[in-house]
Length: 169
Image: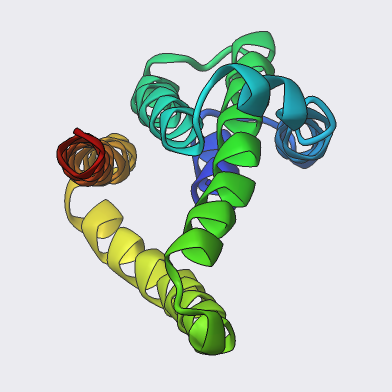
């Protein structure tokens, strides 16, 4: 998003200051939603919050190419910020729960390595795809990858619940 939004904004003729406001709204929502995160965790499990936020983020990302008005893009930026602001801490909580006690540092290190690799590879691939077919398919591809990740997470969550039910019964 931080790579694609400026490109999309300039493609549709937005000024740099308006693009900055859209991205600022995203960042502000990401930070503010974390202050109400305990309300979500009280009502839903960590898995449910993660799946809900990532699937909603996938829908928001796929909607971006259909909107070009400033107000709509600010609203989409806020929605995406809320979704991704919820998913980050939930992913860390799940990693913390799943990591062996003596390997937590290694697990978190691998997460950071993967994130930094994505920060390099995704813009390169996005730029290549964008040059070939345009910007909208890049949004849809990222949304599709996020949706596929949600599906994989859902299977993992379901398997974990079934295993817990078998051991508890």
